[in-house]
Length: 221
Image 1 (cartoon, rainbow, N blue to C red):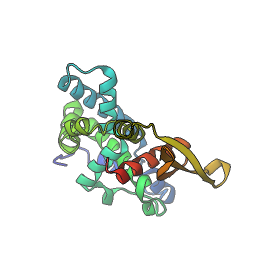
Image 2 (image 1 turned 120 degrees about the vertical axis):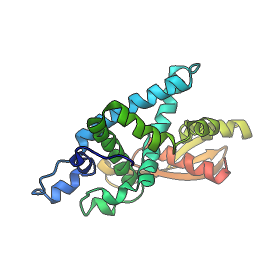
Image 3 (image 1 turned 90 degrees about the horizontal axis):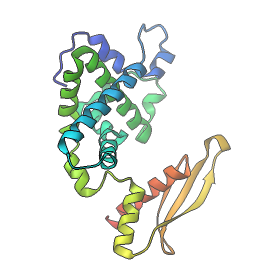
Image 4 (image 1 turned 90 degrees about the vertical axis):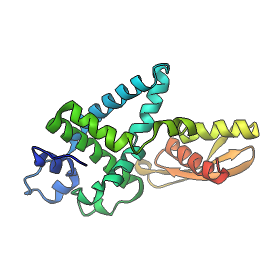
């Protein structure tokens, strides 16, 4: 990270997940959620300031979308992977077995907590430098805008489908499984009568996004 902490305990706290303390109550540690709360606010301010200066002619709606693309779970988990933070996070045995999106969320939350720790230890300028070096160097906003990846998958698929086929995609619930409090929805995305892909999620909205993501891959869009 190219940072020498004055108080290294802040970094350890940033890497301590709540689940670890549930299994290690006598560890004398604190979990990272307060630092995550602080880091989220610092990250949003730094990125907003960066976009405000970089795009003097863009409106607040566009910049809000760009900011979302820079600070979402996918982007922050890429930063975590780049730093190699995953092997240092203190987790419960159960949480340590999680993969996929669940692990990405933990990684992204930890990056926000680290930003909070850097802010306390090094001030605003230190946190801004860290974000610039570790996020803005990895996540290319110009590439995001060029590829329109700041749009969510459903919006991108609809735009491409209308452009290339003249049709608006539709979504249909194919299956619902599990109890009411933890139901899994599987939806299909269609262009006309042709099913392009399936997606599953804990809400119909999440399943639609997953289906659209797969449909973009299937179509090569």
